[in-house]
Image (cartoon, rainbow, N blue to C red; front, side):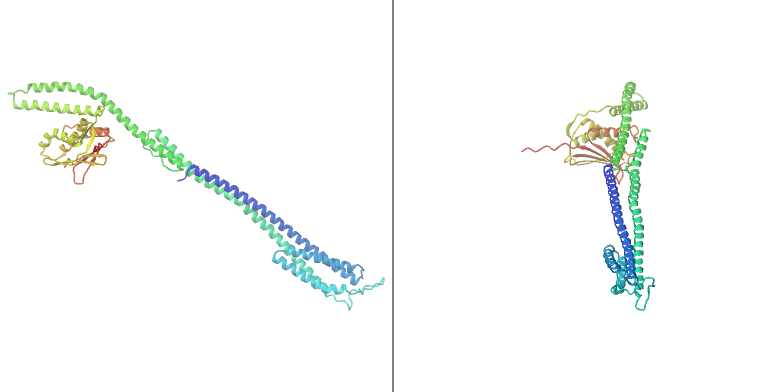
Amino acid sequence: MYSLRGLLLGYNLAFVLLILVTGATGWLGVELRQRSAEEADRLNTLLNLVQETRGDVYRQMTEVFDHHFLAEPLAVLRYRSSIQRVEARFRRLDEVAVHPAELEAVEALQLAYRQVRVQTDDIMSVPSNAVRNEGDLTVFFTANLDVTWLDDYEQVFTANDSLMRIAQQAEKDQVASLGRYTLVILAIPAVLAAMMLLASRSFLNRALVRPVGALLQGLAAYGRGKLDYTVPELGAAELVTLEQAVNRMARDLTESREALVRSEKQAALGSLVPVVAHNIRNPLASIRATAQLHDQPGIPADLSTGLRNIRATVDRLENWLTALLNYLNPLSLSRTRTLLSVVVDESLRLLAPRIDAKSLTIARDGWDSPPQVEADVHLLEQAIYGLLLNAIEASPDGGALAVALARDGGIARLSIRDQGPGMPFRPSPENLNPGPTTKSFGSGLGIPFAFKVCDLHDGAVEFIAPAGGGTEVVVTLPAAAEPRETS
């Protein structure tokens, strides 16, 4: 997971790298240009030395002609001066030439020149035999003259031209190499900048653009009331945190809206039901009183049975109204310390007629060391009474009802398991509306009331479908602290 801070740091480092690379390539270009300039100067010096050496050798050859054929008095002196200049040129060529081909050409030129010197030194060391009389033709080629040194001079000029071609080719190669290197050096920052641009586009799209677009889409969905929409959690770490917060906000809003709807329903029912109950209870009381008044000894049996049925029906309606009012009215706790087994026993005592009517067997477990709880005994008794009543009604005649108590650390646990067909629905504490009932005259309020009471006691109610059939209800409550032993 990458963050915007890390992304910004990465971009800063990338730009610094680009600056360093650009500076390095610039320095490399300057260095390359400097070396190219130095190489160009060296090649120009080499070409000039070749040209000057050629001129010196040509003038030396002229002095030999002047001395031998024209008897020039100063020819020998100028010849010696030309030798010194040529030797100086050769020493300079040895310094300037660096490449093997150049060194080889310089060596060939020096070898050819030494061969010439062998001939010309001999010629310049003897007096001239040229015809000196005015008007006489000078004899250039006589039997005494050996002209093979001219061929040697030709070899010198050929070696000189070879060195010149090598220097010129080296200069061309240097110019071409400089052009190639220049293009490469200029391309490096441009390619790096293009790569950074493409990478930044991809990073920004993945880290910012798409996540922000998804977040805006989610906010628009929430604005339309679609609180079940989930914003994709992608992008930079800060955006992921924001998206998670938005999703949590949507879930909280959903829960708040559902709670508000439930609260509004509860408030509406709470304000309506007491009025309805009052208006129903008055005629019910009159009906029951009239039925009881007319149920006197000596009346026909069928009439007496009908009057008793009327009173039973009125009593059931009264119980239903009482349960409804208990469920809707706000509850306040009056906690006392008590054994959970005492509450269960009292509920079973009140249900004894129903248990006997169905010939049920009650299997108690954990009564030898029952947990203690800090609870409102009356409310808890009503809640457990309703759960036990559901289990008894669901049990077949002659069946068994298992009731177990246990303490698990700081939790007091009550388990009620019947052998009935199982529940047609799975109760949930998130939905405290009255659920369906399988009893002929049930209100469906027993389970929501148990949820409500256990929630007020910081407990919970869980419904389990065991593998062997039936239904198991598990009530968990905070256990009271164990009393400290005093010495």
